[in-house]
Length: 424
Image (cartoon, rainbow, N blue to C red; front, side):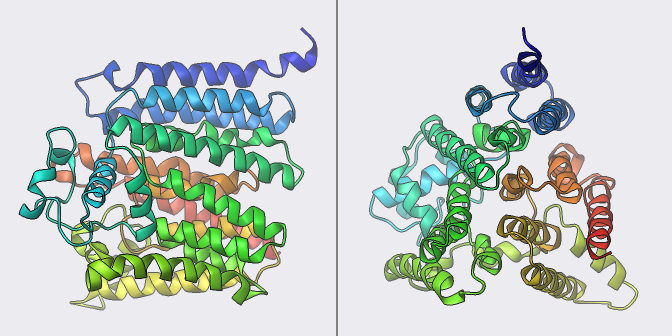
């Protein structure tokens, strides 16, 4: 075997090790909750394999080809999908929303527990839907997608796996566009966050990411209206990608934002014809205290405000978080960095400062950009945010006190250090 061939051995061994853990599944210790097993076994082992393979691939460009990266990525996701959704039940709501629409009813009109939908209930999907008394939270673009997806969890997850393979391909395309080895996509392709949140849990980010990557690729090619349209579709699946307009729109703001906002207005208008004011669904309640999960900066602000305010600390901390977010994003938008670097930092700042829930799968939209331009601060956040699953294994559903500092303090410290170095 030539020296060049030997260079392919370490990442392949890392892939095989990660594959063994994925094949073992959550049945390896059935006495433990899946969330706990994911945090203590699956995530650390697969993450170590992923980071090791990424480090090797980046040090030895061309040592493995993109087909190897894609083959392992597909196997990881297929074996993860052999288990029922184990970390989240959101995928059941996706299937339900699609079924309701195919029956001619708007998912913004009735909650799953409403008697008007009793004839649609079954024993396989309906009992597993979370927030049964709440109308859907998902925007109109997501509802169009749900209508097209099958009313089977396995079929739905398979569709998302195929979309995720498209994401990996587009990451590789962007890497080639900036003259980097396409195999660097291994950081996303073999990440336990992507493997389990999409392969096992079937999260909507699988559909969102291809459109975000397409927006960046077309913007780099100078196709501003196409970039805006792709951005609008991504925002119609989950609203927060619209913030990336700060990276994609300048200096031709109208050429990008007009199609982006046009897509959103068209879809909301279509669904609003039947849902009316209810077209926002559960979204206004999503900022309520009952939905708080893994809040970092806001919890810090509330603690700092305790000696000053006897009431409305939550509201004040919420406003401070939004203020920090706005300032951070304005600074990023004004830099002369590459578009993909701005997108990376805008996504990271959003995740670091968002005053509402931060679930592990929310961080998926940050990961593709780290394949191209890694930053220690954002890598730390991606690597540690799954620790928040420990909340569901603790008595009373209380987050262990050490989790939030481990996630957010090093992220903030590394971000400050990186920013200082760039300004020096």
